[in-house]
Image 1 (cartoon, rainbow, N blue to C red):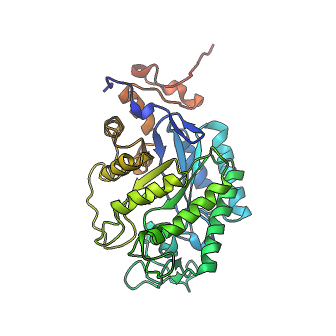
Image 2 (cartoon, rainbow, N blue to C red):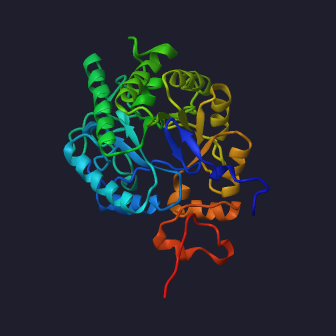
Image 3 (cartoon, rainbow, N blue to C red):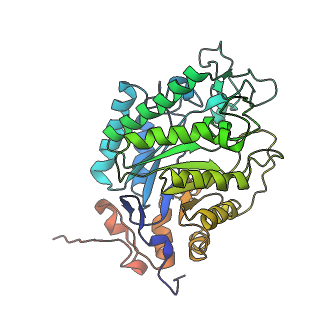
Length: 376
């Protein structure tokens, strides 16, 4: 189909000093394929393909701030020189052929660390196992029944973790990464501080909403200070735990307002992940209503995600003003040329690598931007 009005999905989007060509964002997707935190040839293939997708932004998978911050022993990290060199190799190759801006999702898994890879079950690995370690969290409350309880972070630990986020952000800046997303969703450490299901502290970091927000906001402020002005820094959040008496949308709106006051230009809205008791109501675009309310009440540029799979569906979310950008994960893995196909369907144009210009279908002779071709 061709839209009667220009496709919102392919309008530019500006976040601080960074302007994206369109509003399609490649979401962070863990690959569990690093070695000692270092990116491998798998990342070269995976990110290289996605970089040619025509999306407006490519977000690296959850990137750990320390070895114990990894979800699994095979997670990507950016906490030492070896990690930095390995990621530099991948990003240099990507940038040689694809001009897409790069965002990094900086993360700490908290009590959900020391896990098996999903394809081997995803269960917690005991601390004494060669691929396991003692996890750390706001409170000594395990994620699941029968799991080893995490170490409760004390004041010195909190400083260490904050400093680790800052150190990773500095490495990302050295690598020329244009944007930073802090992982405050899906039951990982910053989300654990926010949720009363995981945070049972009685000090200034627990109890009231203001106290539970304190550490994530401190991390945001610390990272914001070391990322150059103009390079956007925002959070991904879970807008609800999908559990009674857990973190909810009302609290997320207040947190989003605090992030806006701290200088965040955007918020990436997901849900769930902090409890095995979650009861998620799945359906196409099931998380969009959360993004819609946050956008309406805060005015933050809002990124929506969650079973958004069709171009017309994504376009309608933007046309109706329910969000400002669309983040794609599984849909992009299934169809790494999703933005090309969306542009064709919506009557828009997209950027493609010159090596692929000849693939432009006869039915869409103006699909690719800035093309030129000739031969003798």
